[in-house]
Image 1: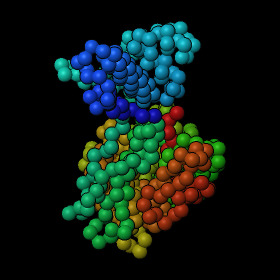
Image 2: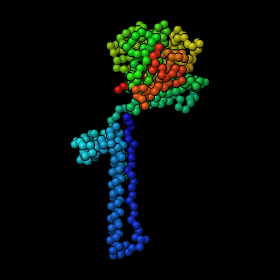
Image 3: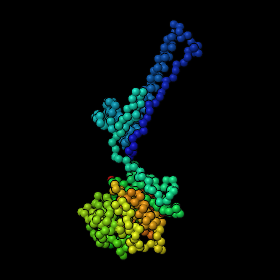
Amino acid sequence: MAFNTQDAYDSPELSGGQPPDDDHGGGDDGNSGGPGRGNRRTGLLAWSTLTVSLLVLALVVYCVHDALAAPGRQGATAKLARWGRCHHLVLVADLIDGRARTASAADCSATTYSVLRTTRARAVARPRPVVAVVPIHPPVRPLVDPAYPGEGAFSPLVEVKGQPVVQRALMRPDAYDATFPVGVVWMKRSALRFELHPGVSEPGGDWPVPATVPPGHRTGLVATYNGGFKLSNGDSHGGFYLDGRTAVPLVDGAASEVFHRDGSVTMGAWNRDVAMTPDVVGVRQCLVPLVSGGRVTEAVDDGGTDVWGLTDGGNSFVARSGVGIDRHGDLIYVGGRLMSVQTLATTLQRAGAVTAMMLDINLSWPSFISYDGSRQPADPVPYNLVNFVRAPTRYYEQSSRDFVAVYARG
């Protein structure tokens, strides 16, 4: 659905043809009083009639085009009828759509029409009240200076009803690893709903929520992303709660992603920023906050493997992921193949996160997937955000670990 107002059109400039020059046509002189004068008058009348007819035809074509180009999903008949009523052509409008009613003045003024320009004044029709357009998120300040052109700039990743409710930006993690970009995703929370899914192994057990996004539950799916550290061996230093059941006890102070009954998400330190309420349906905890109060926490620089976990081969720069919330309540996901804890936290904070937490790390686990349902809404095509090693069909199969599914609100 388009929300932008219609482009203005100038009135077309039409000019009628000139009558033929009789001095070159072989007839009587135009100043003579004979039959030639009658012929001239007849010719002038014919050209005048043709000119007026062309002007009327042009006006009709112009008005019909204007009516059909008006914003909205109505059919041609409805748009023509509405245009007629708004221009006091009620009988014509009623003949078009067979209904005898007159549009109110407010209804007519809400429709966007052409801007009519005259030599004395310029009258502009007021735009139709619409749902607020989702703007493109401001760029993220790149990690490398100087930056490449467009580095850190957001662009639409998934659109819902014509609005870019999921957006993506890419940047280099450092000056040497351009082939392993960091992906930043911004998600408009009010347009989306978020669902926590358990994994077969993490946390394990039987749940009413499946460990996959099965056929029949993919319509409206726009994204999925990975959960946190392992729960079964205590690596997450936190717990897991879903649908009234606690798989692993929740820990005070642990960074927590909290899922609510209305499909929204909040985030923060457990029992300090967020807590259990009747509308909470899921809680996923992992380590301590990366960002709190809009600032990168001291633990990012001070914490070692006891805080941030063991990495593949003991390297600091490995595949990492994290999620945060900005001051508007919108979500931000960051993931890439070569990131340190500092890189992850800094990127989340620069992208606008006021609260953020680490999710899973190491090569096999970070994964953000977007879905294109334009051709097959019930079975959208998955795409990886960046060059993660797992296939984008990962959550179309049984997942060993928990994850989050993101749907467009109906």
